[in-house]
Length: 352
Image (cartoon, rainbow, N blue to C red; front, side):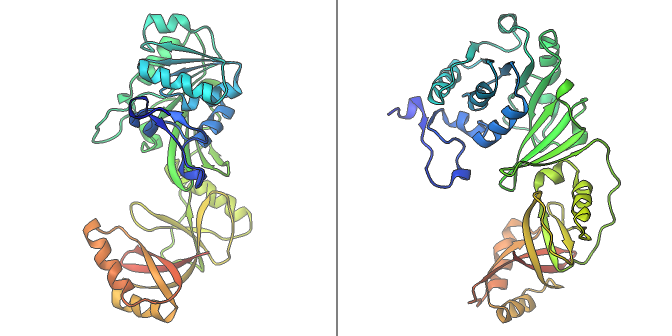
């Protein structure tokens, strides 16, 4: 067994969605932290399936492995020789041998000359260690520089970018694909050339549900009071600004769905009839709407056999537990509820 300096990392058998890889991989702590989760790598490799692909800044090879499973030949470039060794070992562990590794600066003549004409170039550039705000132009190697250096190899490029960036902060002619994994925003991939399918898209894994849009639609009117049911959309839908498309799809199912802007971090959809959609991550029954008065809420919850509360409100971190403790004081039931707070109104919801 390798220890410490060789950095082997073993994944647990249980909780498959909590681990990044289904097999042991070699890595240092930084490599495993930034590595693409296996389920995401599989999805992206299927989308970029082609004959020849170049993977720039391949790191420990988490994405390279699955490109190699889908493509005839993969060229993997990495400037860090230690990561190259990890990537080679990880490819062997996963049984792929159709990868040519190149240890070099991706923008150097040496690296560029070793890459033949390929169908697609994928790049996962490094982000600055500290940034007040994420900026697409601060990636290294920079997207325009990679395209300029390799434009004679292919016209089709894909780049990973920080998912915190909103669509308007990406000044390129590309598809902005936001991906959520198990209900949390996970990746943003930019697709150029023939890879572009729409202006914006949202994907939810593990279901693989997807929404595309080519035109920005006018936001539907907001409501201030919830119906009988409430829903939390996948964060990829929110980040890609595709909420209207999601509502439209849900309405086509025959349910009058509307939206509520709870606070800066939260949006709920609501309806009077329960409905399903793969781009909804959580479903709730709306039990009660009342003023945000902790004592009155506590009295209500005691009547309805509630045990615990998750407070979903834009409060200062230092105030979260004092408020929650007041609400939960003396609760001895069995039910668990979520409380969303909009304009000092508490929306008490029970997960379906």
